[in-house]
Length: 366
Image 1 (cartoon, helix red, strand yellow):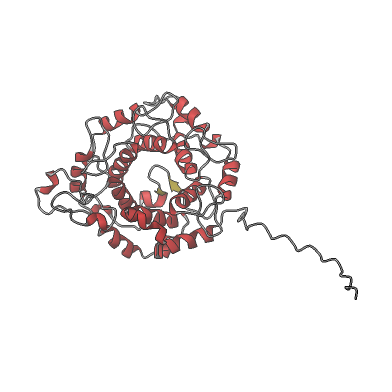
Image 2 (spheres, rainbow, N blue to C red; image 1 turned 60 degrees about the vertical axis):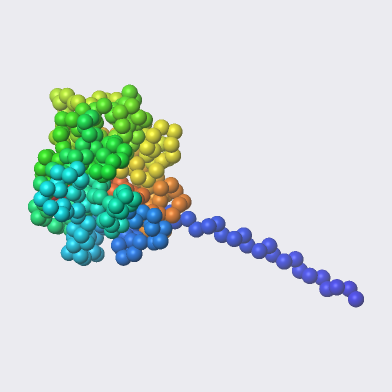
């Protein structure tokens, strides 16, 4: 018996390509939801960052403020939590013991050190102190309630003979990151007793490289983040004015034309910004480089449309931003993606004080 003739079967449809989130606009609501989730509970992947808990909190709280959604958090609870990380001397004599009495970065850094020096990481940190004061300003806490004299007097112990700052009293690398933290702390407390400004200025000037950018230390490669720290610090300390490029009569302590040339070369063909030559565009440099240009008065020279388009390729369907297109979002790049959209004047967002990295309203208290 002959087998029945079968009709030819249609080819099964090809599986759809993986979903790619390409909403052609800034998705504010998703970013608010993303940060709210981070506020409630950090994913387990952040366990290795426990020592930086205050920094992670700064990304969340400041991000929500930029998104005009700071009402989503309990401000009193946030301020009480932040204040619980403040370091205090045990006696009146201790402020002269070489320690820094700022803010610890987490609970574990508050653990007492063992007698033989093991676990000697216990101590407050310049970066944590910057983040703590920023958060307190955002939630409306009056910084005059903080013992700033004790904090700033002990902070002088961190400044080195060359003008640089180490971040913690037990010793660590000294570079422009911690110079910026020290300058921002003094500026927010409206008290410059925490540093020798002239020594700090000379250190910063010595970090400008032959190509115009700034390295983290004198003689090191120019870097977008280091360049921001240098320019923002000089601005906070009052050594450079606002919008240098529009004031032709003002001489500057840095080589502004060479600096501007180096910065403008950081916008890549895909519209994003790179931190160094021959590196891929990265979401965070939209802030580090863009904020530097804002301080100098040169943001108008970039292709804002192309930068906007690049940032949208890093926008996640889960809310937040990734480092590169197509990756999962993380808090660090999410925050600096959000700040970048504020720089670009995205509607529905609060304006950014680029020198402090918080909203203008938080910076001024108005």
